[in-house]
Length: 64
Image (cartoon, rainbow, N blue to C red; front, side, top):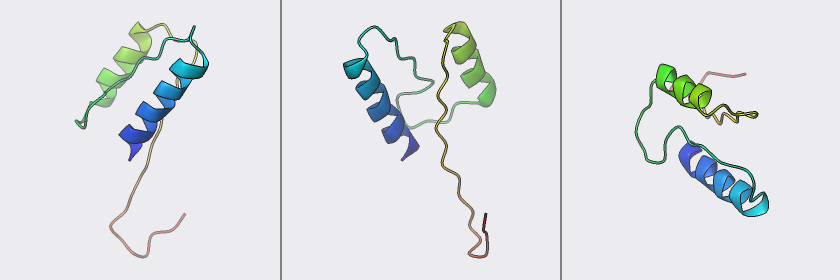
């Protein structure tokens, strides 16, 4: 879900803001270590960083 949202958001940004360069930490369904993600972000010298997350818990009693 998160990857699909990120790819759609990136495409929308590129379409609506053609001067903006979008850099993804991943474009396929594989795990990227946090260290690698921060390295990609830092090397891009970005002025804005958007991080999209979806968390889950197997417990039916979880809340918050």
